Image (tube, rainbow, N blue to C red; front, top):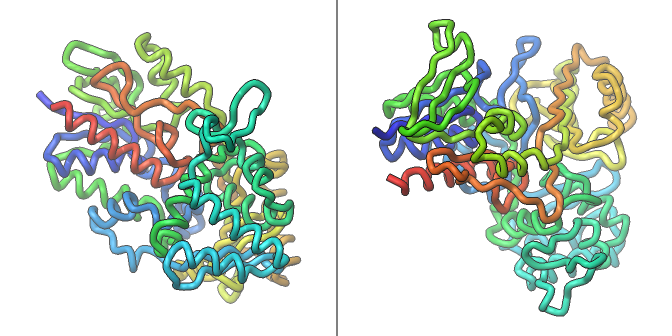
Length: 456
């Protein structure tokens, strides 16, 4: 009998569940939290709908956008869509015109404010060079590679850091600070000094080199649980599937018929742990939780070792509820060399007037401060940058201390197919071209569904 369980109701797990339900394959989703979405979920505070992190989608996230539409979403209504623009308040501004790619980016770079003419030409030349390279680091045999110690750099399996790539192509410190570092942090959630150059190139390739609309920025108007997972649950249930919340997996055990799942105590409604056997299981929970669940299975020792080797990066989101008249110059903008990196005016985006979301990605000094200290520092920066004198009515800091894996060079990421044919892994940390993004999560879930359905 074919019956599939998916452990984890985040974007990866729900994407796999939707793809399987579409093919008529029975599926049961186990989610330990009360709400679906995983690390991209809605959070209620002070009668206000927030997210556990303010995410941004790009037009090149084709699978994510397709899945949202498949389960009933309306992209025009669900998102504020804007052409590519990077604005570091008072220091740098880049806006892409509505021209075909990659001309739109080249024109934007040549018109960028806050750079010298030489820096603009340098950035444009760098992008043209990457395009000639097909956004792939050269192989050691191409004559363009360099050597770091005894290890060749460039080509498959020969990655380098983003800092090394930028230095090699003559990108000045000002260019790095104002353009490439903010892009790298936003895309990979990893500092440029340790970020994978090849993964950064993968994102630049898809966002900036295909269609102009691929570089568009899509900011959700609704919370991330409502955007996809909640709709996906309805889609799955309409097709005979089951989605259980507040119901996680306590253990897995390979058996002759597949995989036995023992649920958490109190799940389902019986209040006791229940063991159920499924022909196939997709484990779609965060890597540290997945490692804990898979560790007792000897056949998965190498997979667990790969997961254990991953390093992690945090994302802090500081929400400030000001009086309703407070607004920023743009719906989204950045700050240069400040604690606050990206600011979102939720009034202009979603009608939540006076609500400002400040996102601080990757590691930094802010991790050493209390949440109240961090909020006060962000408030002080908004006062200094925009002259906001009002006192927030309330603030809320959401710290995802293991928000993403650190996307470092030559990182070995676990495959979706484990050594057990009946067990697969989904999640943004599994093998793929993308860093820890919603698109990476969705792609991994769809890959698992494809592998699973092709085995029948």
